[in-house]
Length: 225
Image (tube, helix red, strand yellow):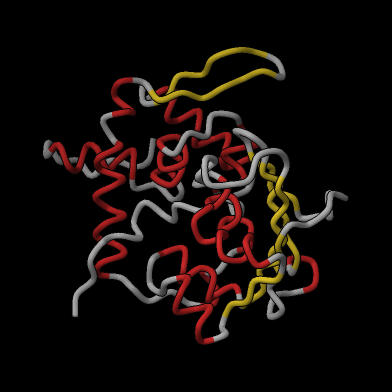
């Protein structure tokens, strides 16, 4: 645990654990359903594995997370104390999207965006069988320009290499524009109408793509005028 504030205030005591860099974002990932180390890494892609392991151990010692399993089958699960942090994480997200609207270029991350999108798919809206959606970010560096979501009946794989399956639709646009759609700053309809985003593929699939994704949990939050 981090250094003490030396205050009896419960807020201060909570923040001695939670205000260390990355800690609350790890809790965010656990709240979102990630359990395995590699899943957590994909939710915090700019965090080093060593630091992630350290923070997880701190959360385990604090009784917020339980480490289950052994060897290559280890899961990290929120304890009752950890689950009580879910409304805290949600409230911070609501406050952040409402009052801290600006995102800089350095905040844009295709790894995090596609990982978040893969967790928010309406499987009932996607055609049966395997559906592959390719995302192209022409403004991104070559190594992060192309991504694929391979959607099956109840699970989705995120690929940064061509998985080799036929692509149903290709979504092309800047990383910023797709991130703004995901956050609820801009609608799919507006982005497609203005041409900032394009979808290529059979017409029925092109029209259906926006319904395949339920968007970020914070997208419906009202914003100040």
